Each structure stands twice: as C-alpha cells, then as structure tokens.
Amino acid sequence: MVRVTRRTALQLSSLALSGGLAGCLSAPTKATTPSATPPQDRPDGFWRWVNIEDLEPPPDESQVGFDLTVTQPWVSEERTARIEATLTNEADVTRQFRPVLLPDDMVAAPKGIRVFEDTAHPDQAHEPTCTGGDGKADEPVGHSSDGPATEILEPGGTHKTIGYVVDDEEVEGCYPSGIYDFPTQQTVTPVDGGAETSYRVSFSLGVQGKNE
Image (cartoon, rainbow, N blue to C red; front, side, top):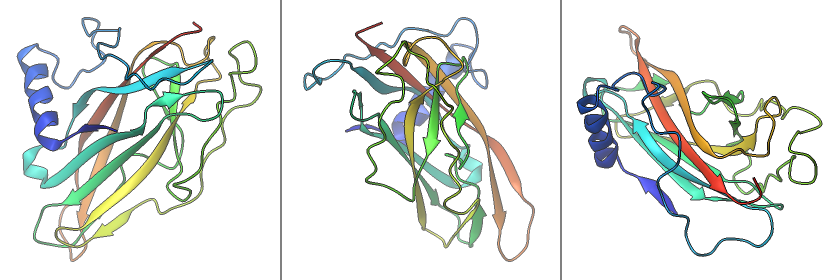
C-alpha cells in the first residue's frame, strides 16, 4: 500500500512553492516521467504500476485534513489500480463537504487516464477495457450515480471515497506511461450557517510499466 500523509503532502507543497510551481501542477517544467520504482510483486503478463507523484492539500486555514492512498497499485489484465481519498473535518463545527473524488469520471491533464469513482462497491475488481485489443476501448467507461454529491461531517468526522484508475478511451495506447494531474475545487459549508469556502485540491498519479 502506497500512502501519502498530510505531513508529506505539505512537504511536497512546500517543494513545489520553492520551485515556482505552486498552483500550477501542469506547468511545462514539471517532470513527465514517474520517478518511483515499482515494487517487486509485479503480476505476470500485461501490467502497469500507479503511484502518487505529487499532492496539493487543502490550505491550513480550511481546517480540512486530506489523505490519499494507493491501495492497489497494479494494473493487470484482471483488475485496475485503486486509490482512496479521505477527508477529515478539523473544525469545531459540523460542515458539508464536496468529495475530492467525484461521482463522474475525472479526466487527467494531460489526457491518458481517468479516475472512476465507485465508493459504493469497495471490493469491485474493475477489469481494464483496453488490455485485450489495440489500446483503444470500444466504449467509454460509464459514470457512477452512487453516493451523495456532498457529505456532512461532524467535528473530527471523516469521509472516504474510492476511485479506480481507468484508461482514457480518447487517447491512443493502453494506460500510457506518464504523470497525470487531477485538479479539483473542494467546497466546504457550515451546516448551521456561514459562508461557503472553496479552494483547489490536486493530486498527480504516475503510470509506468511494460507492453508500451
């Protein structure tokens, strides 16, 4: 299991600031080749490996904790990679949150992969649609209609969303290697009244492997 803690995320954010990349994860000077080394338990046949390359957490003043984990890193012929995002309400009031992993497919920048949210089926082993052909899926991955668009959290409460890394049928190649950014706007609203706050949350996934 590959895990990025809030402390690690803050360190990564600090490094991005020092490099002039804060708020612009898709800047041209950003690395495009994953730097991490795949673990040794790689599957036979077709495989890709997914890791967390970077993470831009919520700002400290938002009082929101964010933890991102790769719980299944391998993309094989039988199943695809799986990630989990956990939000924590660190304020002392009950608030309503918009999840980071959204019910609709999240398209990466640049295109090449997507994240398909399916929290309602945590044990589902989604099979890649492109491994048996020429790298192009016959049909787009469907949208999930399960789960609420927002979540109400008491002080200290947490909410987990589960996402699966799927191939982008609009791009040639089956899970092409590279670094892919997933920026989104997080919104938080106090339940008992108060102003809604909105800020950027972003994470980057690296993909590498054989059979390119």
